[in-house]
Length: 347
Image 1 (spheres, rainbow, N blue to C red):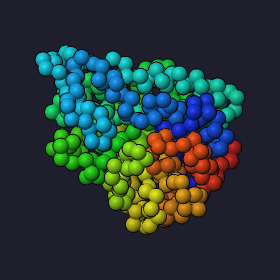
Image 2 (spheres, one colour; image 1 turned 90 degrees about the vertical axis):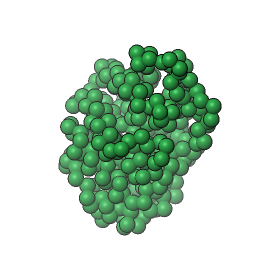
Image 3 (cartoon, rainbow, N blue to C red; image 1 turned 135 degrees about the vertical axis):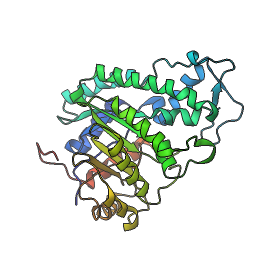
C-alpha cells in the first residue's frame, strides 16, 4: 500500500507563509488536500501565544508558582470578579487566517499550490487553552467565555473565506491525553470524562458549517518536540475517533492520529481494526519521522495490515525545536513514502 494523501498538521518551521505554501506545494503537489499557513511567529508554540492575551485581562491575575512544564505563571480569577466580567475580546485566530488566506490565493494563482487544495485553519480546543493556563478551581467559570470567543473566531473565519476553499481542524490534545489516562489528578476536573469531552466536541463541530471541511487532530502534545505521554497503541485513539463519530452530528472530513517513531509493530496498529467511521472520513496516520523514507514505509506496511486506506503525516506540528533544514527533509520524506495521485483522482 502506497499512500497518495499527505496531511500537514499545523505548524511548519519555515520563514514565512509564502515559503510554506511554495515549498509544500512544490514537494507534495496533488498529495495535499488542504494546507495550513504553518502558524508563524508566536503561533509556533501552539497555544502559548494566547497567554499574553489572558495575562492582559483585568479579571485574571497570576499566581506565584510557575507551571513546571511551560514556565508560565498560572492565572486565576481576580478578587471580586463577577460573572459579567469574564469576557474575551477577539483571540486573533480569525485575523491571522484572513491574512494568510490572501497568501494562499496568491500561491494558488501562481500555481505554487495545486488546484483544488483547501486552506486549513487549525484551532486549539478551548479546553486545551484554559486547562493549562487557568487554575483548576476557576477553569469551569472561565472556559465557557473563552469557548464563546473561539466560536466567534470560527464564525469570523467562515464569513471571510469562501466555504469551498476552507477546512477547519480542531486540535484535540489535552482531552486526548486525559482520555488515555495521562492527565490525571489535579488537572482532571471531570467525574464523567466521556460525557464532558464529547459535549465539547459536539459544540465545536456544530460551529463549522456543513460545506466547510471538518477535521480533528488527535494529539499527545509536542512540547520541545516530544509527546507529553506516548500512546501504548491505537486503542484510545480508536475509541476517541469512534466517540467523535457517535457525538458529532455532521460529517467528519478527516481524523489524524499520531504514531511514535519506534512503533512499527503489529501491536500498535491492530486496534485500528475497530474503527467505526463513515466511509467518507479520511484517516491520516502521523508516522512520518526524521528517520527516513525507508523507516516510514515500514510503519506504513505495518498499519496497512489493519487499515485499508489512509494518508500520512507527522505525529504533530513541525515547528517546535525544528530547523528549516529538518522541515525540508521531513517534507521530502512525505513525498518519497507516498505517490502523487493522477490528475482528477480523488478518493
